[in-house]
Length: 302
Image (cartoon, rainbow, N blue to C red; front, side):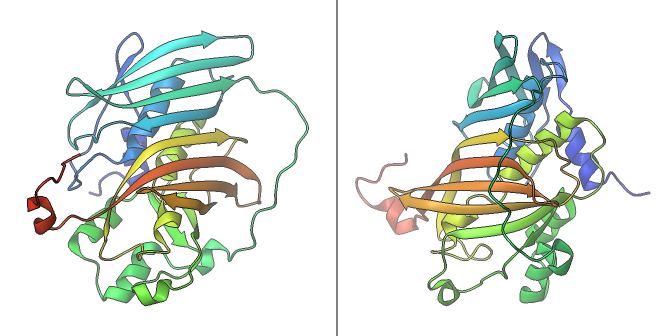
């Protein structure tokens, strides 16, 4: 007997328990990660906010800060503040708490559907997703086999990822590489028909590869890492309805990296070329500390 599919596990992860008025609890899987994946916290927080708003008002934007690393395996409580319920817009503020400490906060705005004029910049011309290798297959082809942690991740991964350009594995291959990346994604399996689930699933996925664009000029995306990275903040604007279990193209670029921080922005298009979501994120990039660094006088742990 087979277990739940990756998509079913993602839907379960986003299905929060309502424990009191405006208070929800989300599960955090036991993972071999040092901290809870940021996209999970953002997706669950948006579920909590959306549960207090009617279906006639879909989310149009969110702005969030990652304040502390979450601990895998420990439930997260989401406290929702109903900031405003206007005629056209609804605003919610969500605080994520784990073990009595705030780890994340999010403000989301919801907007009634209204007609209006339209324009957008065109989607870049890229190969179709079916012509590209799956990420796990590309890594396995290079390494000969998947390392155990990556094999475990590939089995549980809720999204099929296919990079538009081949992966680079050595520093010499990075010479002259621009801080840009693009990847096709879709959930592995059906996510059902709840539009809020699709929105929150894409919010989850939006944190998976966005900082790739910052890293590309300095280190390979897969392999030995020279930097400790962490998401600092995250912003999204939702332009059109979509399904996260259908192919979408995530185009990413980094306009600047300085002061141990890198800024990345992304545009997400559906298969027909419609711009559905815009994303911005800043990430922390600190060189790995050696044992000698830790022992040096005057070193701070912050």
